[in-house]
Length: 243
Image (cartoon, rainbow, N blue to C red; front, side, top):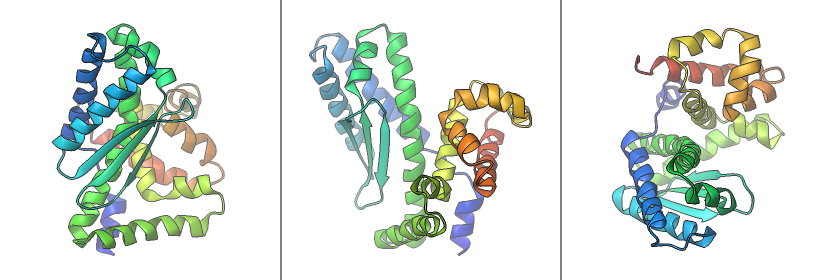
């Protein structure tokens, strides 16, 4: 009970070293892609990403990283707790990636920034798994905790999307991704902006999809969920280093 209270009252970050490992692995394969090691088409992009994923898995002791081509345009991530390695998978669109991979570095960097924002969201979950495993000492107990947390949300809400957004491990991860999407704002400026509804409508909600999901979809109909999300977001912003 004390540990679950800890989970609900603290903010958990993605491991910054692991974020750098993943980013650098993809950047290295992109450089090779541009030098002709891979075919400069969608198949070449996917081969490069697969090689990068294998490199990440070798570099991070308790994490298996996998990438695969999704059916649509949207990039998606998914995780599960396991032993000896937790799992992080990413689905992405080579249709979307190919132009950026074949363009100037600034276009590739923009694509990679978007991809890494989602990776960071999923790495927050990996850190949650690690903390639960450290506290519980057994992977099956970790899975029990995760199942119980998810079940509580689904027991309360019939709507699957609402239940998903009300899972407090998801609330934390979405809040961190919103913080990253809004990182170009000074932290004090952003905290002040969050107090002004007209600024939220016209700026913040337009710049962060994760913020928008909670603001437009949850705020009025599910104010408790909205307040949980806002609490985590403010905690992440407040913990930023001053520029």
